[in-house]
Image (cartoon, rainbow, N blue to C red; front, side, top):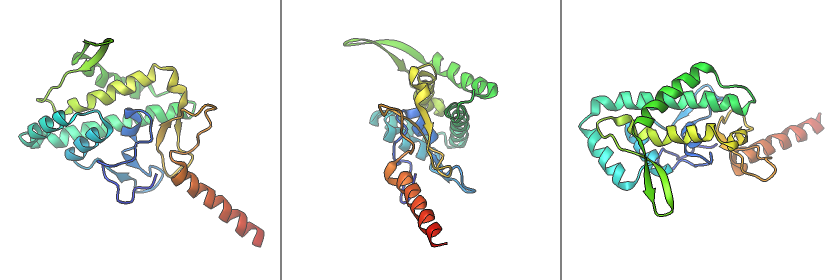
Length: 209
């Protein structure tokens, strides 16, 4: 996926699930120098608001709280990247038709168990739902919705629809919701067109030989 003029607050959301979009905050995984969109804790906040896992009110609260915990911002960001790469290895393996590594599942379950401690069931007009309590004292709490998203996807029937972009250099993951499960690219107008142009070029130059 192209990243020209892109940043954490406007990054394309093509994954289909928050956890997959979170994985896609690192672009061009197949290149020597991938593009990192989460370079600061502020980037993580901006992206969380962009993807919808943080409300405007929550953004204001966590932004204000983080200002008084600057020494903890680097650790929280490091943990976020650690979670992201763990999720990438898990879902990338599954997209390739392989089992997730036990070590990665153990790591994810450590994150998940902490998230469950801050979870509760609340009543809504038409039933009940999961709710994740804020923990402003811990800057990592904004990862909780992403952890829950990953857990829900891992135990759902949709797991078999998780795919990897057909461009090896891209590396983005997405949920293929097409009727015949035939989607190949994270974005047809980007990676898809680039692959199409490459095939045309090779075919054209091949005819000239």
